[in-house]
Length: 491
Picture 1 (cartoon, helix red, strand yellow):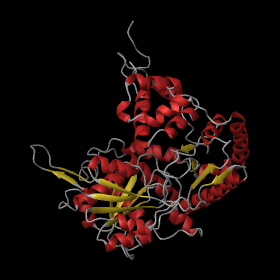
Picture 2: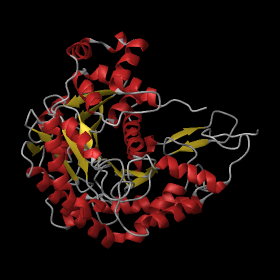
Picture 3: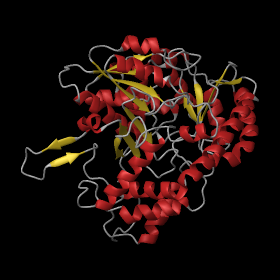
Picture 4: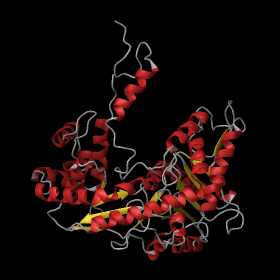
């Protein structure tokens, strides 16, 4: 009998369109909910009726347009320029400002924007054999990824355990003659706090070094929060010494993934972001971003989203989000044993537990079992383990439900008690080196934690407890191996 269906992506005979869509919907049924305000990470839902349909229609109009050659598809060039202009104007640049010549590019996401910011800074200093970047430890991990990919040394700067910000004196001390870029976050992803951007930019400028502000996560929301009266400190191109800024449109601009914007104060700073190559018999390649071929779909969807929401829409969504943040923070304060790791100043609620009987990783599992999906963060360099809530406008209608759910989950976590791993397993995690991991050892660890090929356990507290006990380098290797178990081909 001829195969026409099954789980394989390439059947012998094609499957009818309606059936293929049914299969995708069935697979999606096991995902976290992308709408409804119960997922506090990964997705950004404004809760605006009709916005998804508009973005999808705009995406379809330009899905097959190729951003490789802007002269062939001027529609995409026009939309990209409009998005860059909107981001620049929102972030203190453009005509009539102290940064009138801001230019930029649309990228696939924050990680690409940050890699390109590092590349531009590195390539502007070809005289340096060993370029370096200075990044607070609260800076996004994508900077470490950029350093790894681009062979740039990473100089981390600690953050204060109370303020969760780097000391400007420490940033200044970390700058060397080989430093090509200094980084500040507005806000940081983990805790949602804004670094002292003006002071960091000043010490970078005094050293003759570029300063990049990573506003990928919540930078689009900050200007609207400021308009609503929030005490948002200077962080954008209004700050002298800020040479580049990145901001994701697929976060608080509520565009579909993946669209980010990387801005430079002037064209000269952007020049080294480009890659051009003519030493081959094909077309001369010139790319402003990492990808060559780029679908116009995400750019068109972002353009449609910004045009439809407008300034009044973003201001309204920021007000709703601000109120949701306040309500969630109150819910945390109301539970004995929990405390906010930082007073919210953007769109993040981050909390920890002071009660040893209340295991945060078990609490996360208990919240998940009740339909609330949060993000656990492991302890790091004196900072306690914490729970991260990314708050979007769609969360607002759910805030009243979250407080009782959090209290109930905390009570259940106390009743269950902390995760207790076998002492020998904890000792192994604390003493192993990444090089000592063997396939058999990895398989045994995975099996003991409920990890199997293509499947993760329903509860992750034991996994997180083991990772917490492991040194950083071993933790990284274990995660690589565990995720590798999940990503296996289906035949």
